[in-house]
Image (tube, rainbow over the protein chains, first blue to last red):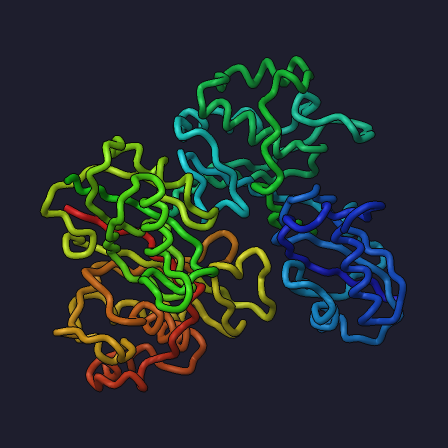
Length: 246
Length: 246
């Protein structure tokens, strides 16, 4: 048995998220079906990040075990033949027996994209979310520093998952505006709680809109109450950007 | 009669370009129909850049004359109600009688987006074009400087339009790679010949692929022969970025 690591990109719009779904299409299942067509094997694919319905990926990582003789470096090509246009494997390689796409990951980076406008931008709306045109970049930037480092993110996650601890470490967080005027919020960390990136993005947006003050973020952390944080931003603005390993 | 200036964004995919079409949908016609629904008037809309089928716009500009009493600043809102999701007016204002969207324009900027990959990137393919993974950014950058300034661009345009002169001035041209790894070729100039941006992009890509040498671009200009320049890159990588006036 060899272990194969895949790097995968997808547009989330047409799927019910990464995980296998009882009703509806999970990206994991579509990939497992494509691997079966390529190898003849029933495999179980383990993803690094269980992206929600509508969330995109530029660098999702997943692994599976196989007896197939397909060259590890060419696996992506064999699988892509059986995938729809909005899901593609970008690369493949063999990894050691100890590798696990999720548990071996050292750093995960997400990007949340939004723009301030009176009108929905047709060229941007599939992976960026419109916010009120009153949004102030300078105000929002003041909120960024409060999230960096190791914190208890209990106020910044939705209930619905069992986790041992709500403490996570944000290695890096930055808000940049690109040439189109789109804001890109990049967040890197050792792991993320349920809806954590979308709630952090919503809190930063609310600071930019003057609904919240940047310095109140300290109190929101301390309160450990979800209701005190900002809105959960829509799924389609979120992209799993990359997963890094040692 | 007042003259109204519109700034417009659209996704080119579903349309046969800006201009009125005998067969098929031109974006100009769709906007004129929407203005008629908003004002009750038959107007003629003059666009700054006649984008080809499949080409996108983030900042197309157009003007029309009207007797309508709609507030100039709110015209965009009235028109948007009658537009499909992939065409939107971003803003509107009143301009002087001498204003012409095309002839008053001082500077036009296009962006051509592409990426070097073995696999089509699902998240990028609607407005960026895949090129061979052998593409070298460093090689391609050497080609950029040859295009800046005033030149006879006869070798860098397709036949099919009558123009008095094929001399144009490129004010600025730069090739940047964004966080996703996508190359953005920004070109600003006083005007562009038919397919000129797509042929310049194709020539730069061919230098990046080692098919052409950067220094050969001088000879291509001198030859005035279209066949000596690079390929015409596909329409869907091109976006009319902005039009500037005094």
